[in-house]
Length: 385
Ligand code: ADP
Image (tube, rainbow, N blue to C red):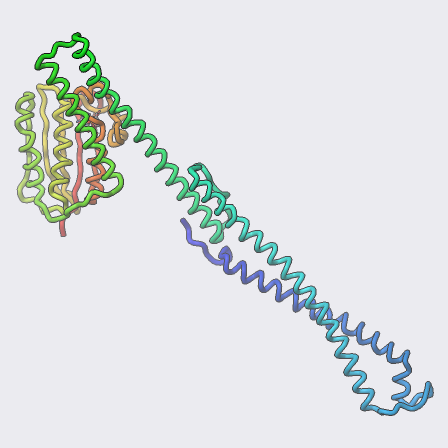
């Protein structure tokens, strides 16, 4: 947001309004001095003439000679002048007060109006009406406040929408394994499903799926609330890569996939939480294993780039369509829900991976030439200095 500058500042507007009041006072006073005072002065002189005071003072024949002489005349004149001036000042100050009232009514309307609208809007937002916005206003600080308020309201609305979506997604994700469990249990009760080892293994499998989902959800909520505590330290990239690769090597062999590794041992250390970095790489390797049918190849490579080390997992698997590439890091987004679920996926793995990589100061992204043409996942971790 642009900072408020120069004449658009509220302080300058208020100062200008004070100047306006003072200006009206000075102008009225000048007008009074120029026009009103002589009128009052002449009318007092006329009164004095009518009462014959002047002539008496000046030695005229309108009556008996004045007793006070020229000194008394000066007193009379000074008294008349004071009265005229006081009356002129009264007119000027009444005009200045009227101007002050008019200006302050105008300024108050300009200041208090937006503030009242902000108060009303914030109350409505507090009551859960997140779509509430205020008019953006002018270029001064109040306009700035209104725009910041609207930005805050938009952020709150987005958070609320995500919260509702998450609740909906979680309910949806829980429904499938629960329905499967229910189906088996009912079948067992009715004697339709045989109480065999296979049945119990399937039940256990579904229970395991539920547990993994709950674990992932817990991890996701921590990651999204930025509550994951990271133990950042200098770690050798080869250490991260070897730890993740060793975990999964046997599974690649079992599935009949080639697992190529290019792990240079002389790369500079990265600043990362060792376990979290291993978790991210394990997640990418698990996905490669999951979405690459045999016979195929999964390749893990490490390479230096400016200020960071890049970890790359490339597979020859099912690939990802261009339209899905930007979405797969969103929670519960799965290109093929039934395939992912059947393969044990929850659709949260990449969301957690992205939150972890970004919390460690790195980037994560995916590339794929298209469906059926394999996929490449890359992430970076900054160098330890
Ligand atoms: P899941 O638990 O479903 O694998 P992820 O968040 O790890 O959830 O991945 C989200 C989606 O991205 C997957 O459902 C899949 O459609 C797609 N995906 C992830 N990795 C790959 C890959 N190596 N090849 C093809 N598709 C992938």
